[in-house]
Length: 231
Image (cartoon, rainbow, N blue to C red; front, side, top):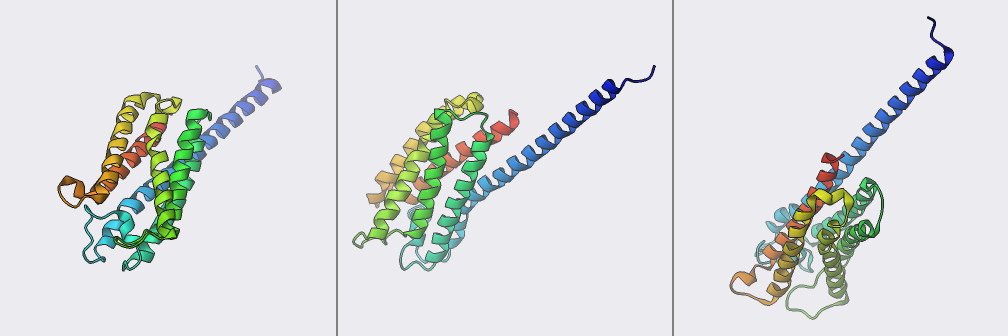
């Protein structure tokens, strides 16, 4: 029997919808991989570049000295470290856009989660523009801005594992996020109280700072990767 015109048109519409859906899925995949690269670039830039810069700073100790020490006045790598902080901040702002796109809806938990990433990025940019003061000198306006900006950025990002517990897209990672939250607080507290110690385990301020960053970055990476696996 001859195929009716309506059936032919229906088949064409079905084929068009299928093609459109495939194109959207491919575009979504490219978008996700693009923001994953941005996320990995931000993490590597913040943790790896200072490893190389530290080798060009005589007397610098990665476990005892903070990352910001590389950007203080008189540091032979000041301009490189400040540029790195600004770059890292920009990358976090770009990733915040990607994280927002990955959410199906935006509720209060999604919003505060995104705010944490954004403020951390802004704090990093300001920390790069306003370097930390060298140890032993009176605090300058640049040092104050650096401390406030980076401190607030850390505090807001530390809360992200807690907000993640209420985010539907991370529902299968509640235990992981529940563990990451106290770890983030613990490493941050150790980082803060170690700044005025020169002996014992608490002399390793730089180590605690890097551990805190590792916890925060790992939680962001695992949550983002899980969204891909659960789609």
